[in-house]
Length: 357
Image (cartoon, rainbow, N blue to C red; front, side):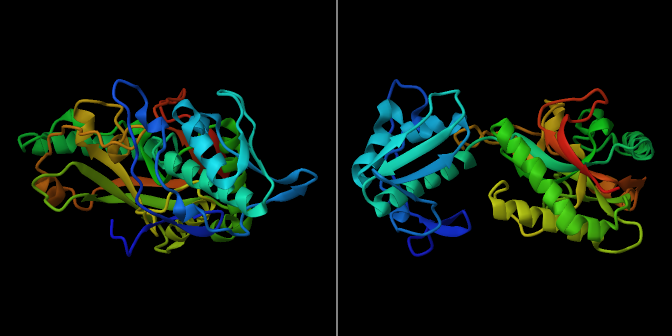
């Protein structure tokens, strides 16, 4: 990272510089990532974004956070909390592990409370980004016509291209799990799942109803593309999804949903637009039928996991099935889907949804 171009973290609508820090680790101890060591100068700038109330004893601010993240504020042997308290001249009260509640910051000086609050916000954001994705916003694409079209595609590909390197039945998607992802989520409590449901409902009332006209969006799943640069070494092949009437309404809708969730911090901003696609072949399925693409490649502490995968030669598939028609369907619901789960229909379990009609 360049010193003159530090990473920016957006919290409560404000940007903070994330300066380089050096984390101290201990040998022969587990969960080294629990201890946060380093300077937090980027979080020391007083701002009015934090809600601070004056009390007879001084000043007070509260932070709601999932209990899973408390340990990162406490730190190894309580060192992180002690460091923040000492440098900001505040007292920080944190609920016990497993108990839901609020982190309470108190102090004699308003700026000290604001500084401690901002440091905690930055820590929470940093460690939240290291958590593996738990849920995703998606349209289900598993209507009967599309499932049948997908099975026909698989049958024809295996009949015509099975001699091509790496092409076999193990790398095809489960037709019951065909979906279109809008964005990945880290939801660490029932409260955050409920917050996501409420935000989806707000999206419906503010712009989804206008875009959809209160009716399902009629779309087609047709044509294929690949993710990487070399058609002779493909890892992910996907089907394209577009509106039957040729309009841009589906793209507009998902982009606005993405933008809304990015602004709230529930989705980390990686792209400005959603790529409308449905994975039909993925080489990660070769060894693990339940693999979930690139979103499987990081541990809880943000470390990259190397997934050995054998690419396939997709040149003939792309040539023969470039415009393959999987079928048409009506998109009427956006789901909050939970990763690594299966419902009674063989699809991802849904924790909530909004319907267009």
